[in-house]
Image 1: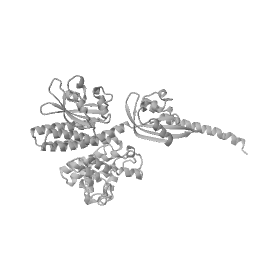
Image 2 (image 1 turned 120 degrees about the horizontal axis):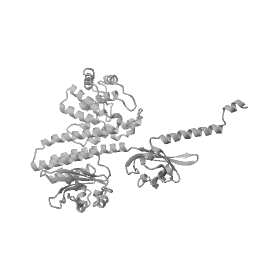
Image 3 (image 1 turned 90 degrees about the vertical axis):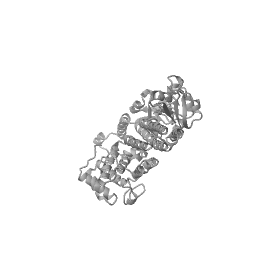
Image 4 (image 1 turned 180 degrees about the vertical axis):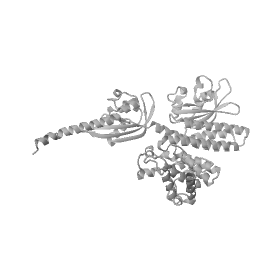
Length: 521
């Protein structure tokens, strides 16, 4: 039998349960209100919004009242996209749905790319849908810019091959347009030139891609009226790059919008370039996507147009092609730097890693007596040796703990991904091979191919040593920096086992005798 004292100190079970429920509800409400991701709660039967947290209100710009009681697809941000009634029916059936890069539009019209995850759960006998919405716009735009820059690098490489092999202007122009479509992935490309008459109508010099009579219907000029407002006309007149992010809403495309959209053109860019007689021609490209003209891509397209200008001048003057090969190397090197800078924006934890590895590679190769040309090629390869990580999910790269076996398996694919991106680019150095081999080891224990010492380029062996040292000296997402002493002990232990002895010895001399230190991250 329970004593009076015991009854007084222990509340009845029902009261304890109610208190626990109140505490649990308060905790959930605090998490819901303070979460740094958007959260929506929907009725699983009607799809009506029952609650929305402050973060999502701020993200999309709609008031709390504008959300409440509406179905998901009745909110402007979610109209005309994948979250429709069919998707809702799938969610009801499977109790889970996920979109990695879902496009949303804020109330003010800004475009967002979000990760959207929905789950159905039971709440006291009532099914509720919880939607978690994370803004990935910055990461998405960086990835798009990097992919576009890599694509433009291939265009630049192929265009330069065409430049050195074309025997006539017509062949050169057609090849540049073909490369823009076949390699660059644009819908259509054409080159135009304004005539000298009063109308200043633009004559088509060359064209390639999905035209379907578009250029025959296209009436455009470079005069300051009516049809002179086209991107091509404006570019020739202003001598500046003109681009349209969205043909469906841009007023400059009013005369051509219907026909352009009919052919799948969603955006356009016009890049003017000079001809030897001081006339202005223009390379115009059309894309099947909106908002594709990132700053790095525009810069590289301008380089391609400048190369085209040079090529025409060279053909007309029969200038020696040797001089151009120098500018080709410069263009390729500048492009490599653009890729390195763009890639590091995507992964904050490894910002500066490639740059510091490249600097150490130069010191080791110099100490070993490699030629200046080989050292230069090694520096360029090391500057983008982790390019393949574009194919690895960002959340794995930034994971603040050790990776699982499956996750590390994905990481191990990055040298091969980089090789596939770069193998078609005609560098004067074996850039792609150096990069794909930088995780190989001289005893065959490395990846992705398990090559041994005699099969590996010396540049790759040097890069392997520099990569190990920099990785251990620097902070990583899953651990603090281990320090210089630990790094040098590691390469000493692996000397002539997994790491090249000459490269290790040179690296040790640089640190122990020359007091080498890395630049600040």
